[in-house]
Each structure stands twice: as structure tokens, then as C-alpha cells.
Image (cartoon, rainbow, N blue to C red; front, top):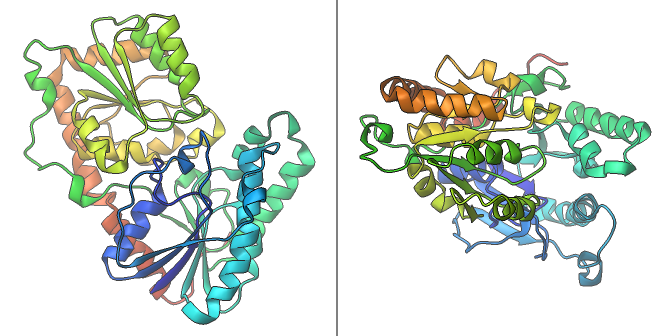
Length: 388
């Protein structure tokens, strides 16, 4: 199977996404992947903060040609504008590729790719990985208006209905999806999972200070202030925050202004180093702001934490009702976060049991290898299913 994927960011960037994991595992299984990507761009966005490339024989990266003067131009709502510009030029490039490459599948994932639905003689899969209309409204800020939201929603519905499948990252998103809908969650690679008999690190603190860690994007949907508030009240515990994004500078300033000597900001790291940092954490945080885009998410970091058999404290997200069987700890405020950390440290035996339960569930249901097989199985099956 040959998959064409227009990606609205640089492929080898700090921000390792669902698509990197899913398409890499499909490439490992022998499928061919053609990624259309925009030119390089100097930006605070993690999508453009590049890392050293690691080539794959079945993944072909194609830089879409966009006039340099246009691509480098500063403009209002730059993130949205650049996605739209790239998608226009990527569509032109894709139409030329169709005859020479003859791809079997076109994988789309956001509203700016609307024009791609005009392509014929190819299986279109729309991946509904985030609440795109809500995200658009947040990005627009003061420029948001009901007419634009209505138009975005209408375009989104048409994209879903034009696809052979609409894949939803969460059950919450699937309830508002259209077309032939399937849930395809996030996961973690089997190759990074610890051995099943690995002991919980909390059982061997040996007098050292506990480490509470967060991994992920420093963006508007993460409640980084809640984490700092808890850290301010727990000076005897170290907080390790790994990631980058538009909120990083503000959080860095807050750490200095509040003299939070127990908070370490690492910055963005390549995905190949992520698990080294998780292994340094005794307790892992899956902390979000409780807004619609968060409740509809299925956080990759959650499965990455659980793959290393770590106890996890999470915000109460609606989608976790479909994941958690009692192994997660919950906190929606700094007080609850402090209490959850103390509960874990005071009963490490129970924390180990819960961490192991999360690990076993991840190994059984949430590996990219299993999810990749589901993706291929859908496309190889006869066209049928429930439409919304």
C-alpha cells in the first residue's frame, strides 16, 4: 500500500506526532509513505524546530515548493495562514504526483486540506485527531466569529463525508464525527516498552528526592500554572518539565520570578530521547486545562508514561473514562495534585500495582503496531460500516 500524506509541518521536528508513529510503523511493515512537507521556517512552533533526520527506506519526504518571499512573510494569524498557504501549494504538487506515484491512500487531518477532497481514484482517510473547530476559535482569538466557526464546521463535515473512513482519536470526538466512523486511539511503540518484570522506581528512592515529571507541548491547553503552583508548595520534590512551545518563555520567566529552584525546564527534545527522561521521573503528569479540546483528546504522553510503568496523575478528561480501569490518579487543582503526589509516595506498593495495570493495558491495546494493523485492516476490508 502506498500512502500520500500532506503534512502541515516539518517531518523531522521536535513535535513528534501521532502521524510520525503511525506512518513509521506502517513503513516498518513494508508500506510506502510519501510525505509532502513545507519549506523550513524560523518559528517558535515546535512543528518547525528541526532535529537531525533519521531516514527510512519506505518514507519519502518531498519539500513542496513555495515562493520564499511568501513563506517567510510575517502575517496576521501566522500559524493558520501558513497552514493554508502550504495546503494550496501541496494540493498542486499532489495532483502532479498522482500519475507518477499512483498512491492508494490519501491521509488528511485538518480543515486547510479541504481542497484535497477533490482528488479522484484514491481512498481518502480523514483523521479526526483534535477538535479542529474549537482549536480554530482559540487560534483566531479576537478575530473569531460565529460565521467563521459555522463555515469551518461545514467544511469539516464535508471532508469527513467525502472520506472512505473518518478515524477518530477518541470516543468523545467520534460522537460528533460524520461519514463512516471508526475510533483509532493513540499509543506507543512496542520497541520502547520496558520489560514486564521491571520494578517501580518508587520502591528504591534510597533517600533521594522524588522527581515529578511532565512531558509535552507548552501550549494553551496544558495547565502549566497548576504544576508550578504545586511545585511552589512542595520544595522538597523536584519537578522535571520536558517540552517546548509558545508558553515556554512565559513559564521560564515564572520559574525565575517565583524562585522555583525545584523546577527544571529541559526544553524540547527529540522523540528518541523522550523515554530517557520519563525513566528519570518517579511520578508522571498528564495535566491539561479542562477545555473542550482537552476533553476530546487521547494524549500520547499517557501511553508513553505507562509504557515505562510509571504512576500517572491526570486531569479528569472525559476520554479517559474509556481508558482508565482504576490505575490513574486524578488532580484538577494544585491542592489535588499535592494530595495525589503524597498518596503515591506514602503507598509505593499500591502505586506500583496501578502502574503495572496501566502498563499491561497499554501492551494489550495501545501499541502503534496493533493500531497500524487496524488501519491497514480497515482499508483492506470491503466498504461497509455505520455512517453518521
